[in-house]
Length: 535
Ligand SMILES: Nc1ncnc2c1ncn2[C@@H]1O[C@H](COP(=O)(O)OP(=O)(O)OP(=O)(O)O)[C@@H](O)[C@H]1O
Ligand SMILES: O=C(O)[C@H](O)CO
Image (tube, rainbow, N blue to C red; front, side):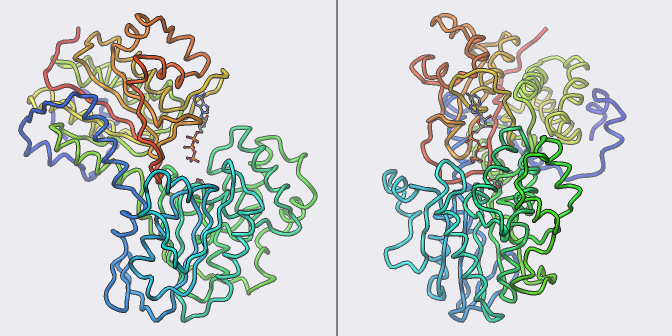
C-alpha cells in the first residue's frame, strides 16, 4: 500500500493487514479513461446482466466438467467413465445443471433423480428457456416438490428415491451430485421416528424467530438422514462428485443445502444452544428429543459408520464471487474502472446503505476526503461483513480514480443483507436497500450527475415481488416528492416494491424475469468520471 493511502487510514488497521493479492488492481495500472455513450442506468443493468449470465446453471457446469473420450476431468481429478455414471440433484438451479451434465456425459449415464421446485419445468418452457430442460428421452427422473419453498411429501418422495439410488451403488460407480440453493427444502429425509410435519414445524419456528441459515441448517443436519454428509455416506463405496452452486456467504460447503456430501458430526451442545436461543427447547416433540439424545447414530442401521470422505470431491462451481468477477469484466468493457469490495455483505440494510453512502462520498471528493470518512468506513464495514483489508483496498482504488483521473469507477459487492420487517407492505431487501442508498446519495448534492446505485437478487426475485431490485441515485427523494410519493412512509411500511412501481411508471425497477440461478445479491455503485468538489 502506498504512503498516500497509509496517511488516511488508521495505522492500526494497516499494520494488521498481511500481504494479500489485489484483484483488479492491475487494471488500475494499465487503464486509460474510456468514454461510453450509454447512460449510467443502462450500463448498470448491463453489468448486472453479466453477473447473472456468469452463473447460469449450464454455464457453470460446462466450465467445470471437461470430457476426454472415456473419462471426465473435474477440479483437476480424472474419473473413468464405463457406463457407471449416476446422477442426483436438489435445488432451484439443478434442472439446468442436470441438462448440461447429460449433454456432456449422457452417453455413460445409467440413471438419475433430481428434486426441483414445483412448477419449474412449465415456467422454464413459458420463458423460452428450453436449453435448461431435459430432453424427452432423458435418463434423469425429475420430481417437482417443495411448494412455497417448504418441504412436502413430493420432496420427501424425491429424497427417498435419491437415497435408494445412492444406496445401490458399488465401488465401480461414479455419482454426480448437483447442489444449489433451496436444496434443503427439496431433500427432506427426517430420521425416524420424526415425521415430515414435525421436522417442518421445528425449522419453520426457527426461521420465523430469525435464525440464520447456519443455525437453521445445523438443526436440519441433526434431524436428517441425508444432510450433513448422509447422502455421501449412503453412496459409499462409490466415488461421489458434488458440483455446488453456492447461495451462502463464504461458500461453506457444509451449509449449502445443509451439506449432504460433507461429512459433519452433530455436536449436541451446539444443537441445544441454538434451540434454546430461540426458546424452542420446551416445544420439541418427543421424536425430535429421542433423535437428539442419540446424535451421530443416524446411519448405523444401514451401513457401518466410517469416514467415507476420501471418496467425495466437493467443488463449488458458481458463487457470488464468480458473478462479481464477471460483472467487473463487463464494467471494464463499458468504460469503468472496476473494484470488487466483497462478496460477503450482510447485516441490516440501514448499515449497508450507510457504508455505500460513505464510500460514494469518499470516491466523489475532488480534494482529499476528510479523514473521518475513512475512519467511519473502517468502523462500519466489519459490522456488515466487509473486512478492513477489503475496505482499505477499495478506498485505495477510489483514491487513485480521484487523484489520477482514471475515469468512472464501478464498485461491486455482493451478499445477503437483511431487513427488519416492521410494516405490511410489499418489497424486498434489494429494493429497500436501493431506496436507502438513494437517500444517502442525496446528501452528496450531486444529482443528476452523481453516483448511481443498483441492487439486485441474482435469482430475479426480490422478496415476494416480480422485480429483482432497483436502480437509484441522489435525485430519488426529490423525484418521489414531485410525484406525490412520501418515501419515508413507504420505508416504514417496508413497501419498496409499491414505491418503485409507482415512481416514474416503474422505470427504476430491475426486472430481468426468471434467471434460473441464485448466488445471492449483487450491489453496484457507479461513481462518475468527472471529479466533483464536495465541501
Ligand atoms: N416487504 C418486504 N420488504 C423488504 N424485505 C422483505 C419484504 N418481505 C420479505 N422480505 C425479505 O425477503 C427475503 C425473502 O425473499 P427471497 O425469497 O428473495 O429471499 P432469499 O433469501 O433470496 O430466498 P432464496 O434463497 O430461496 O432465493 C427475506 O429476507 C425477507 O425478510
Ligand atoms: O437450501 C438451503 O439450505 C439454502 O438455500 C442454503 O443453501
